[in-house]
Image (cartoon, rainbow, N blue to C red; front, side, top):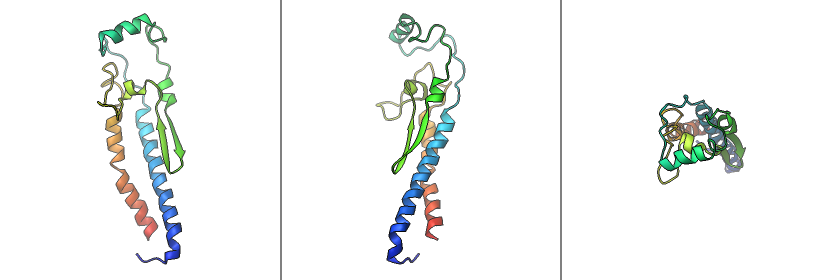
Length: 144
């Protein structure tokens, strides 16, 4: 590929825009894959600890009543937004316990939610592995 040096700034600007678009598309796919209602609770409840079990009952279901009734706040609270040079995907509290929390010392997901809700780390590895190919495809199209 041969280009006049005066075309380089426009080419780089377009490439940055393409990479930003790939990141947004990736975050949107992650959002779609995790914004799925988990299976109903299984009994007996698989508490992470006796302390957690006692806290649940002492706080009237962590303030949500007993038995807990789903409100869809978790699913509806997931947000994907464009930011300069990228994308922000946010999950409301206590999303780490529900979906798992990548970046923590262990990729923890509460036993209560394990195998009932999507495991975020699996989704991330799957979707993030597609980024190099998608960027390469954009680069090939832009480079022609």
